[in-house]
Length: 181
Image 1 (spheres, rainbow, N blue to C red):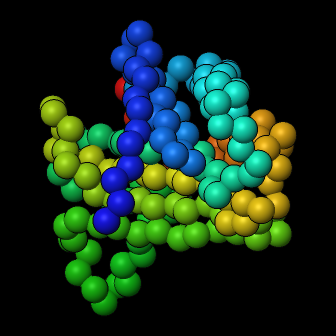
Image 2: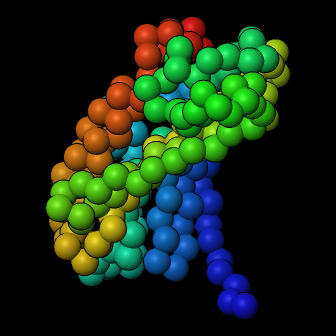
């Protein structure tokens, strides 16, 4: 077993965290998410500082991930009323189910990138009876094809793909939940 040292830098508002280690740079934003226009510069600034210290020549893995929690007052609901991505339960199976997890992986950019999409049950948030997590992880499946200087365009493309997929997963009733949060 190999020990790995990582340093964590917390932003003043304690909602953004930068984690740095050997061959690792993670930029994390907790809610409230201030939008892409605020997040992208934070990522690029962290990477510029990382480059000055480490002079990377390439990437092992690039990823942009959004984890979205949807909270419901109801204990049970019809997933198809809120989502266009959900587990299908055939008519001959019981329709009243408990915890769930479903996911797929989609290929993009001729297989260079992938998007892992998952919908799963989560521990109910305080004041709610049911919580679900919609997890979208866009990542490089073949990082050798991405140059260090191409980080910003890669991130912008990843953000567009994640946005399209996110919107494609939700029905209007689910979008309203995000507006209320």
